[in-house]
Amino acid sequence: MKTLVVYKSKSGASMYYAEEIARALGGESRHYRSIPREGGYDLVIYAAGVNGGKVDSLAAMKKALAPLGKRFLTAASCLREPTGEYRREVAKKSGLREEELVLMRGRMNMARLGIWDRLLLRMVRAKIDRKAEREKTQEDREIYNALSFPTSFTDVKYILPLVKKARAMEEESEAK
Image 1 (cartoon, rainbow, N blue to C red):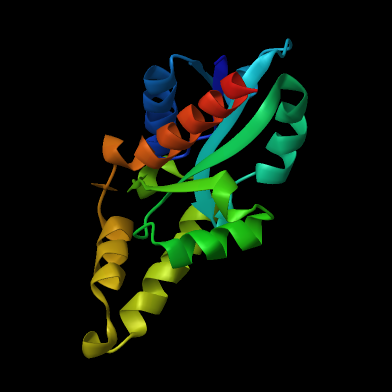
Image 2 (tube, one colour; image 1 turned 60 degrees about the vertical axis):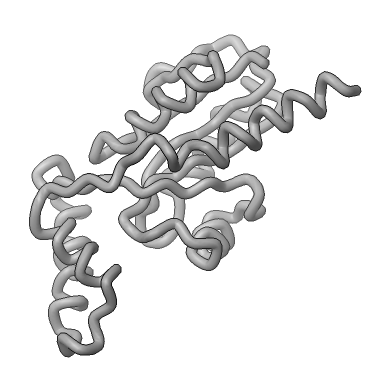
């Protein structure tokens, strides 16, 4: 299956995952600013971060990438634990069906972000800081630390659901 993985990465996590996905599927990974002009891909995967509860720049990228491939999946890196409930929330806000989205834990380094992203994330950190200590969850503590110090939760294991899904798509198309 001819696969293209296009990524937009602020912290480096989406780039890392895009390269690992491309390697696992025998495809190629490209930065979103250098997408090929020619299509012919069986599968196009867009990898980006979750920003404001939805996949960053997804609508524009779906439009730009649609002519390149027959099928489309989205891989998104996030600081939160990628639970089924959180995936449903992100899929809904992003205008995706759940089965089109795979979430992977990412990384954070505030120094790599632009001023608006830093401002937004400082507000998130302040919101967590205002909670009483007994009300803070383990996830709150992890996110607070990730927003305070460079942190990485990246692990290649997070690409497995996407790789399995892509291989199942390949088997399905071969059976036809």
